[in-house]
Amino acid sequence: MTSPNTGPARAAELAGRLERVRNRIRAAAPAGSAPTLIVVTKYFPAGDVELLAGLGVTDVGENKDQEAAAKAAECARLGLSWHFVGQLQSNKAKSVVRYARAVHSVDRASLVGALAKAMAGEQQRLAAAGLPPRQDLECFLQVDLRSPAALSGESEIAAPSGPARGGVPPAGLAALAEAAAAAPGLRLAGLMAVAPLGGDPLEAFGRLRLLSERLRESYPAAAGISAGMSGDLEAALACGATHLRIGSDILGPRPPVR
Ligand SMILES: *Cc1c(COP(=O)(O)O)cnc(C)c1O
View 1 (cartoon, helix red, strand yellow):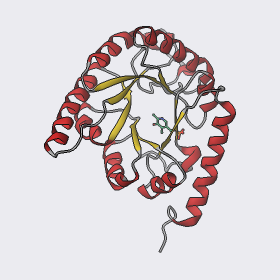
View 2 (spheres, helix red, strand yellow):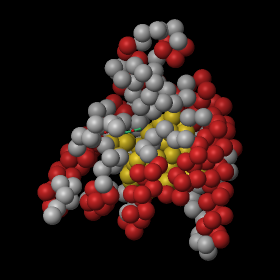
View 3 (cartoon, rainbow, N blue to C red):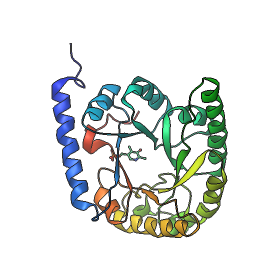
């Protein structure tokens, strides 16, 4: 018996969807830029990750530790880079640093502390096992891009700004960057954001670009901009995105959120 997610039909479906997304990226990416495509495989099985690796995908994203840890272990031999993109509880830091190259959702100083501590423990574990150290954990600071009015609470209804989608308000960014840059075992990679629901992604990602320019005045190497999902990758690329996180346009619609 074959499950619907394996076999030649699924491989052909993924190949077609991936090709369409790659074409969109090629069409929208500014000349000379080479954005990293992270395929967000949440809710989809390790078999799909394997098929995607066969199609040249090198970077995958997940938003829940339990699911990510299991899939990363199952797919270890594929040599993929795993990106953690979801809300992260500090007590999951130890697990995440075992498989993740990057965390895109660093949104508070306490998480920076937990990740640094977890990295120290992970390097000790590797050394004790006679293994080489891992590279520093790439950290993207997640910014809340809802309108300034919504963030300050001035706009009660805030329909165009929508509900919180995670992240530190822009006013908290400098302090968080300082913490991440100073933390051993972490590398401040840049900023990440999700476009607010119901807003104009081009306007929101434009503000993200300005915040990124400001960040780079203090941390020139923190040049990453993780922005752009299935519905707004063109807007993100127009605003300088270096890392795209694409799920449903490659894997198909997700099952309803549980
Ligand atoms: C699920 C998810 C994505 C991918 O979204 P799609 O709209 O399916 O492309 C990107 N970023 C984060 C943080 C996600 O949780």
